[in-house]
Length: 117
Ligand SMILES: [Zn+2]
Image (cartoon, rainbow, N blue to C red; front, side, top):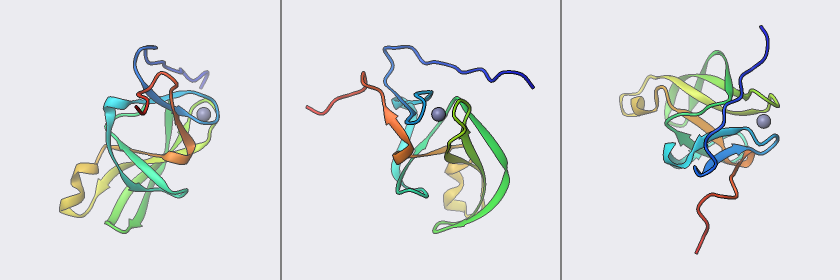
């Protein structure tokens, strides 16, 4: 299969990256919601995420109903960092389809990101 292709966002774009290896995952502007729960605690919903590989489809019953998801792994260090929603079975959860969850504990925001005043 050969090498993975790690992609990088531009240095002036604040990004969320892998806590373990620093691979870029998502830009701040892709963040949709911080109001999610992951295995380790808080989780963030993103419109798009890079440098991850997705596992096989699995059904997962969450507090918001049944979903079909794929686990997401960092392409560099293979850490399981979140999941992707493939199918949401409840009408009011459909907005999550095709979106990505990253666990807050497993990602870090870049030093050039927005800072608290
Ligand atoms: Zn990593």
